[in-house]
Length: 101
Image (cartoon, rainbow, N blue to C red; front, side, top):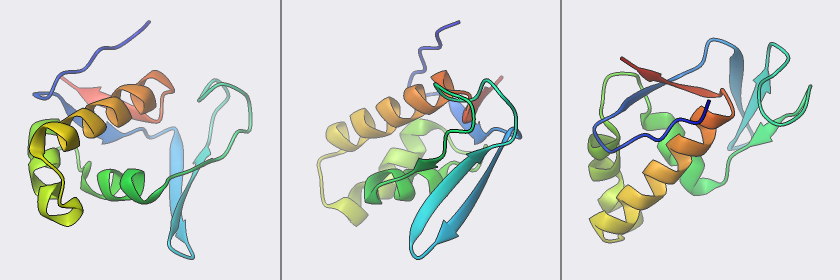
């Protein structure tokens, strides 16, 4: 099933993954088969992904997450919203994030 989130969506980290920060990078480890594209696949996040991941608390909308990152990245709001939405859609598709009802 493909999920297409919008900026009003609220996302939280899946209970089927564990994330750890190691030397400034976030490493995401699936705990169950079927997360991501292959079994036992590990994920690391770049600087932008790391910043977005830190803000996804299951309370804020993606629009609120993007607004909180505008000053940090000094990019236009529309660009940050596009990045946040793309990140959330991709990680939701892989089962790393879940959209809250």
